[in-house]
Length: 226
Ligand SMILES: C[S@@+](CC[C@H](N)C(=O)[O-])C[C@H]1O[C@@H](n2cnc3c(N)ncnc32)[C@H](O)[C@@H]1O
Image (cartoon, rainbow, N blue to C red):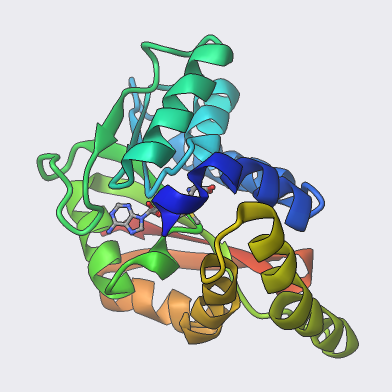
């Protein structure tokens, strides 16, 4: 599915969210920066990195090496091209890998981030376990994901857009029928803010917290490896 939409993925991301996704990634980078304070020569992993937007933001915003991994070749190819265009090649190695079986040793990274990826894994909890495995002790997991709007009338308006407008626009522009129908369905199945925080705690993260973004359309979760 991601291979099919890769050519239009970035455009649609920014178009369908009126570019608010860029702001959400900046909030994620700020949180990662706070978690990296005091770390010596830190290194980050951005998994399910797709076309690399968060990996690039992390690298540029925090000036740290970031490994970008994803299992979708066409998404990574686009990511590599973007990394080259912004002049960061050499600082953001790109690895083709399944996020549920990451090819990294235990305790490798200071931050493991995932943006709009955890929801797509066969098992989100297993994804968190794998993130925890590759984090150093006191390393931070950062999860940016669609969530549940918390303001009543706004929630209904957004749900209408998300379920009845976005899938048609997505299909029209990407030429792929199912991907943008899958998006709202997958968000509905994904744990809401509190459940995701509880899931992070259940796999062994401490100091778990979250922040709603744009009224809860998305949420940023974080947790520290015990
Ligand atoms: C919605 S995109 C998000 C891309 C990027 N993180 C962003 O913020 O735009 C989800 C990505 O997760 C990747 N993905 C889904 N399941 C995966 C898995 N098991 N292993 C690695 N990547 C996976 C897809 O290939 C896709 O690139």
